[in-house]
Image 1 (cartoon, helix red, strand yellow):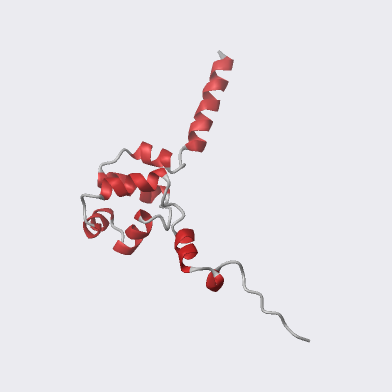
Image 2 (cartoon, one colour):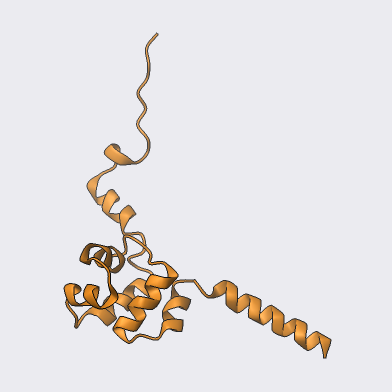
Length: 112
């Protein structure tokens, strides 16, 4: 009985270009572009120190390899003097809250 070795559609069989594109999946999102623009005048080392991240973690965020948590997004916005609500909205963290508040307003209007 012969065993077949089937490689997954990712990993070693994927070209290097595809790996980089897959890892940088957030590169073109609005929050990522905004962070990169705001961080341009500052060195990565200085920004990492302001935020309390390692340079490697900061680089992963700015390069679009990882999406920051809500807390990390707020810390980055503070360090870059960027509007927190705008950045959180771009990242999609406030969509549910906005919808909930809108719904609650509608309920309040119905009760009046």
